[in-house]
Length: 243
Image (cartoon, rainbow, N blue to C red; front, side, top):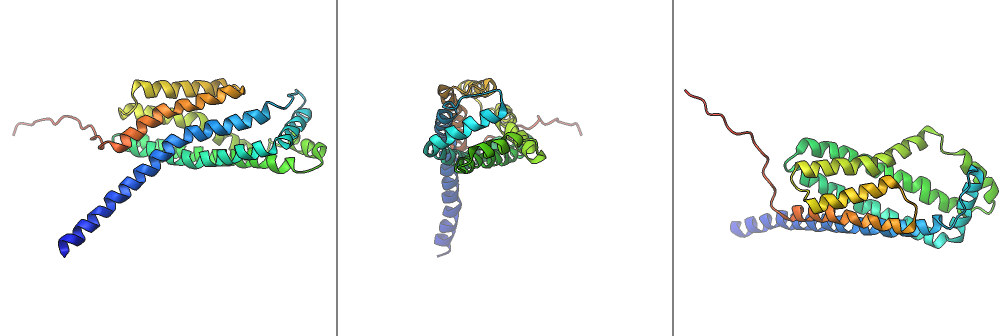
């Protein structure tokens, strides 16, 4: 009886670990695809507007574009929300893998990951949701004037900074952490650098969204590390002393 209970109890942690790996691996593989799909839909709407150096006219054109393609805009918003959820799981997976051998870097990565998640969530609310709500207001002229004057509030500035940290700083720290933990092969590093380069260039051309798929390379490496046995922490060689 005791042997059966012990075996059953030992099976629970193993099952929970398999479930955790499965969920995190799903997040790792789904996040780049969802980001790509969201960006393709978003850019299709954004590129249908007529840009202007006049802030009011530019915002007015953006509102008209969102209104004309409200279904596609909402699809982009839902995909972005799904991306944020899977991105959270992907960052958790990265922190777990790095923590096995580089706990201090993992701590720093965890802090910036939290900032990334908050920043992406605020961006979703202030950008996707706000434009969807404003597009439903019939008086676009008054709405455009209001939006043209917005953005200088400290909360908006904080949201922008957190979004930029999430988009640029967090992936760099994760990449350094994976490299220091010896979990970033050359092909995964190539994918990460290609993605970072596309983010820095900031192209708004619709095909540029496909560069987000380059994240599949480092994330595939992370998925492999999750399934592998944990690496041992490097210890300094022992120094023999004469007694």
